Length: 252
Length: 252
Image (tube, rainbow over all chains, first blue to last red; front, top):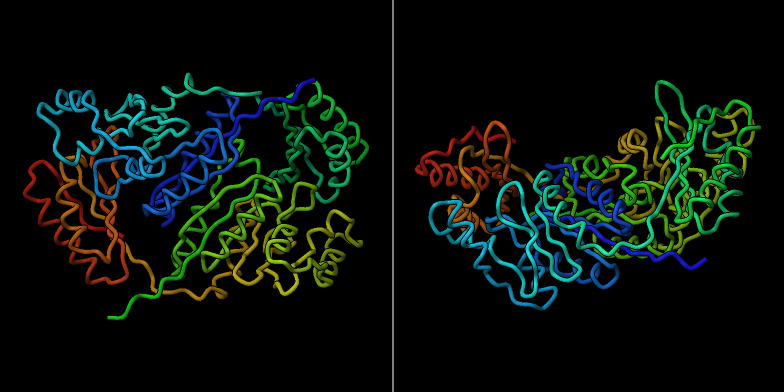
């Protein structure tokens, strides 16, 4: 069995409004699910404010370490939208006005765009546009970096023009076994035994507490379906004798 | 007028389940609002998986740069809960079992805790416990680092034992002016004029699009209420002549 090919990504969320608490980010989760479906493993995420040096530094670190980088936010027409400038600076390329975007804007507005809107027509040299099916001005890809809007609906629209660009690796699969009526503390040693026997898998335990009871969701993740099923079967075997715990049928 | 004292924080979210997309984080937003109310500015956030070297490296970078660091996740009894070990390693201190926590556990379970639960009784040398009003085992503070649970309700309960420990600085204030019926592109130049005239403030523009219309929320943030009000008044003055846009009463 050859090593599964691991392809990774990072997300860089840009915007003071996330850090101030004014806005709750929802883009991270959407991108995490999207890349996972394409065989790309989200390996790290960062949130930085609208500060040029912070954005540039984060872009450089993330692009050096991971296969893809997705940014969200900061690509509108206002003075606080500086993501395109930062990406160009981080990658050491020029930022050029794209005549096609200017032409599209001229049609859309019925007149040539003003200086602020022209800012949204800038693409780093060597980049390609990412379609924006909702509000017009595109995002862009340059090399491994995908630059997307911050408004969730626009960001999600842009994802539709990204799947075909990704070269995914082995797809990470997961199965969840729900254990009710047993605290994590009483099953931890049993879980660790199974985890140690399957070093190629990751076994996570996520407790829940609620009015209807308590327990843990055991999530087995890996690249080999047969090994995942074997680990789930072992979990069922070791957990069943522990009276009191109820196991649900494993789910995705 | 003296410089406002700026006190900063970072959040480090720990857990494969956030990066895989299985769980949508809600702790970042809760901590952002919490620290802001205490005069502490959230300056950066990171999400890393359950990988010891990544957690240790992120802790060291964040603790070197910001005044406080809040971690969430990885403090349960199972083998994938490694946050306490990582904090001790990052800060170069020992991780010791706290006899008080062991005694409390013995009362709670009616018997001495097993090896897995004893893991939750470990506190880095020099640390202090953070009360967990919901499920028992505490979080802890060591120096500038606050180590909290990942389950949102437990995390929020722990925040109640943190406010008194924070030495906040100047409180960042904010006012929002909602502009309806005008796109960001048509008001960007006016906004930039006001932003340039108030270098001590931050002026953010957050567009919205919906079935009921479109526009932008203009958020003015800073430490001096009078200057914020002056900037809001200027925004109203410059935006009102731009026919079509409707301004709402400024709100918090």
